[in-house]
Length: 481
Ligand SMILES: Cc1ncc(COP(=O)(O)O)c(C=O)c1O
Image (cartoon, rainbow, N blue to C red; front, top):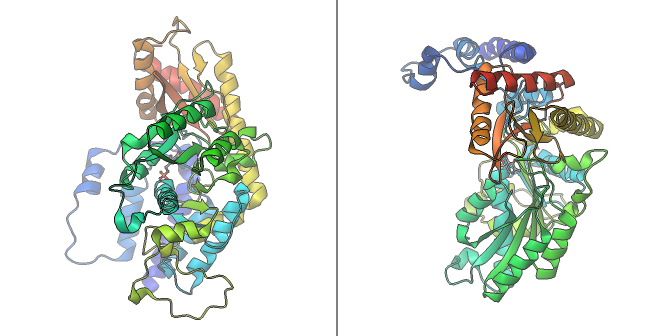
């Protein structure tokens, strides 16, 4: 144990030094061949190695090659810097090393508070059992859509857990053309079939069009199919758009559909002082997904599935073999059972501890300030883009994502040509290679776009100028300035 004490103190210093040095280091850099070989090709050690040596290896070979998401100028995908409170307690969760499948110990008990807090932040109704932490939004989505599938089949007197879907009228899922790919993955995995997915067209703001949703449902009903669920987005991954949730909830209610909301990235945007009115209706969802490892900055991994009716998840997942019977007499007034009855995982890590620490450290005020500051950065970038001759804004800014494109000098602004798409497709990698900014791209309809996602409280307004300049320099390097 003395070994752990000494090496652990070194590791703690190393983590703190690493985080302090991040802003002055390259955002990202390619791994040189010798270290790449070490990372991928080590042989299995025959004899065990001392703890101190392992810390040295991490110092020399691992920490120098981050993904980049701790850096204030990382604007890629939806990956945040880790909140220090989460970093602080992660080793303590590992020291305890519980399985949060269930049982009577701190892990599952604390998870109940964290899930309730998350629902509270989103203004979503919550009862015990009305949600659980998952590895991320992808698994949370599987859990929610499994609950939706189970509820719909049960209403049609079909036992999907016993009989599967074979012979059942095709169950149709509606999602926006801008919906996240995890929805399709979940649908495929749940045996719904991608053919039964309807991509509902979006409006000019990349929001799901409720009128088009109505028409598609009518067509499917006329064809004898079985519409069962509509999945809307509270913050799409490409532009941060929020679908008109209240109107979609109305359509779902009219047709008896399960109303699911993907708020993995943007759910927290509801806290902004000037949050889009389109968030109204989020609390009407039957299920709602949020990723604390995105905007909140809880260290990966931490997703969350919330459901209006706790029975719906338990009904879809509960299986309690004899060896897992709960032997403790409880004082809890509710019949909660185990978390493993609410989702697909059995052994579950202590995700609640870093999430609890992060939320406690920030408080509601800190979280609201983070959301306001980062949405403010996205708007400020949009203004700069609109003022520049060589950039074009491609979508309204609703949350903390700015979608835009670069227009090489002399380009026709109305141009949709292949050249423009080629440049913007090539730019993210070129920008990343320069090491000062990390940017990723997307496709909006037929158009190649750049997108910058702001999640980091350490990002400042000056970083936006660096971002635009780096794009220009990268374009010059590609020979297209
Ligand atoms: C809107 C949205 N939904 C779902 C996901 C999937 O989340 P995860 O990667 O945590 O599974 C993402 C990831 O970026 C996302 O942005």
